[in-house]
Length: 342
Image 1: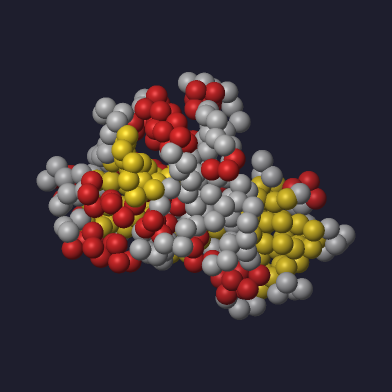
Image 2: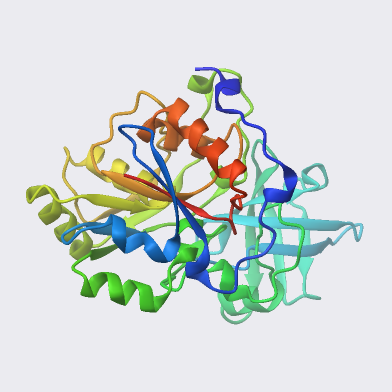
């Protein structure tokens, strides 16, 4: 399929720059994946579209302050790093700006010696393998020196760092938030469970795929970057029971969807406690084995995420739903409104 088939025109003023004060107050577009019919609601209406026995799968990754600003030892040049994933103890794959200034052996100083990084390997697309040296606990130093890695389309400062975390964030390691989950409050999750909705957690640490645009005209040629995932036995049991009872499984966010589809493919259609790396690329023609529905935000034109939702509901239905959202002044992208595909 051609990349241009996943393009749409978005007025710049609809790109949400700040989160709403009330997480549950976002708009909610409900799309029937079989008919293409759209309904307009609010996120606090979500329970109206769920039924007892449904399972919601939430990604409990926690965003780290992964953006670092340092000084190149030899020249004093300013270097920016975005930490993507830890490959070994204190050796990270990072996106570097400007990458041309960082060669193998380059040493970068952060926080006047509090943290130093040495380039161990040059990778394509401005990525480098960086080995860090420090005294103390790495994540405490990162909390002190790093900044939240907000997407480039967000120009305003984030007043409260916690608003780029889900209320159930637990496992540190993500370079971006699983943004569909930002709409939930602890109170709402409790109310859902009281109504008989089951909750299962998985972990997928969001990496370069979130920041990297598709650069090929034929999407079959696009290669996803790998991201680390994990599912525990408790969640696997909940999901297998749901499948056995023919109850609906909703992925909360594209990261959850990709994790679940990876696991079922690796384990012959079953959910199993496991961990590993996934580079699964979901686009139209994909046969979903794990999920029945998806809660997600509105995604960038020509992005792999638009392709994923198009695989679930159909490209024309998704683009029509996006047109409806634009007509109704929905807020788009990370801090924007939500869509339920069911």
